Structure formats: structure tokens, C-alpha cells
Image (cartoon, rainbow, N blue to C red; front, side, top):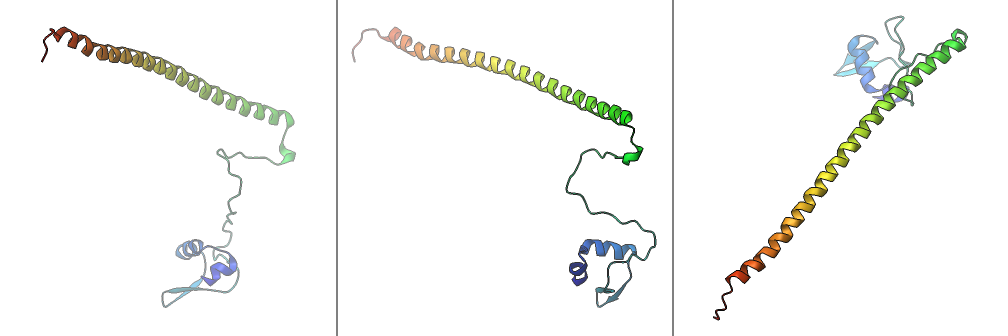
Length: 141
């Protein structure tokens, strides 16, 4: 735990490297003891993994060195990516327009249904009054 805090290496990284046999350690009483010094991997030539960057991207893009980039090739690649983005955007836009049309049709159907139900409701309200008039025979109780 102290090693982790001192050298800013997470406990899970230490555990993982101990389990993989990448670092030297001693085990005493259920504790793993590490040499006091920066983490040195016991396997020479192992890769160092960089911490995650603060900027994330959905699609990784390889950026060649500036000396290797041909301006025309860069321009064509940029235009190709831009065209792909435009196509994807237009597909999404077309889907949204179809959804809007479908929802407008549904709203129109629902408005028609409301109108019909209101007419039926008004007719039902008017009907009991006419029924009571039919049964009124002029008899007094």
C-alpha cells in the first residue's frame, strides 16, 4: 500500500504485475514486499503503457509524421472522411424525417379518434334526456 502511494502505481497494477511475475517481490505473512525504488520490470524489453489521454475518440486515427505526409494525399484522405461523415449524417437525417412523418400521421389519427369519441360522448349525453321524455306519460306520482 505504501509503495502504491509513494510511486503512484495503483494496487491493481501491482497485483497484476506480481501475479504475472513481472516484478520481484517477497511474501511474508500474507503481504507482498517490494524493493523500495521505482518499479522495474523483471522482463527486459517489456512495453510501457502510457496513461489514458484526457481526449477520447470513437475511431482511432493514425497520424503519420509531418515529413511523411503528402499534402495531396492528406487532402484526399480528409475529403474521404468528410464524405463518409456527410453520408452518415444524411442517413440519420433521413431516418429522423421518416420518424417525423410517421409521428405526424399518428397525431392526425389520434386527433380523428378524439373527434369521433367526443361526438359519441355528446350523443350519449343527449340520449338519456330524450329517453326520459319518451317515458313521461303525464302521470303524476
